[in-house]
Length: 158
Image (tube, one colour):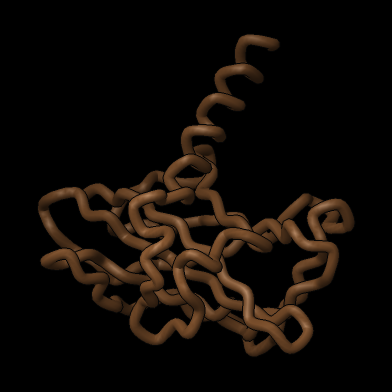
């Protein structure tokens, strides 16, 4: 049992590492349709894609977990402010999120107060192809009067 827990911890850590993209930080760049600089993301909100909840296949839903690292609640619109991108010619291009959400806002409490530590968010990037493709998922919420965001890069396979 201990070996299984160690293996699961390692897999989870490997899923979190891609959400920290040092190549994009410090550039002062923004993604299309997102008003927050990349360098300001992932500081109060963190995303990870648990491998046990994902096939990472293009045709399947993608499950990510959002954790609130601040001490204040974060309010999300019905679609969690999700923006999905693929990289083409060194530019991040928007793609559709084909998942449909109920018409209700969601509050993400600080990690210590959230019953499961975070919220599971499901999306369906509208990508197809016969080669693996990297998608960047951005989630944007409100903390008081300030917008907060996080992103994660995930490799999807045909």
